[in-house]
Length: 129
Image (cartoon, rainbow, N blue to C red; front, side):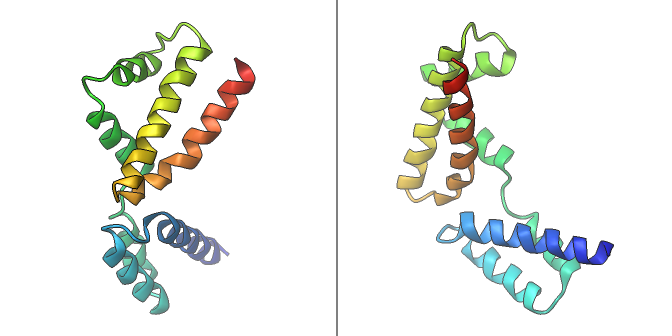
């Protein structure tokens, strides 16, 4: 049963990777991963899937591009827990969402991975504010 769960987890990760990284500079990694999947080489596939950036990697990279902008300071205050109210957090996260969209427009479509999470977090804040 554990083998089936492991294969299911790997398969789900492959589907996620394909969904968010298709049409990006990571396309060749997707093709290699699919080949490994079709060969049922799950150990190598699992290792291959670690080559894709995580949400944290993308968030860090995106945030770094915002240094020197007011949104960076707002996001820093969110992380440090120094945000006074939900509207400030909403403003910071919506700006971050906008910048993720801008990156997608520029051809860096891997930032799609962040959009769903940011949208959900913004929605939570909207109902809370």
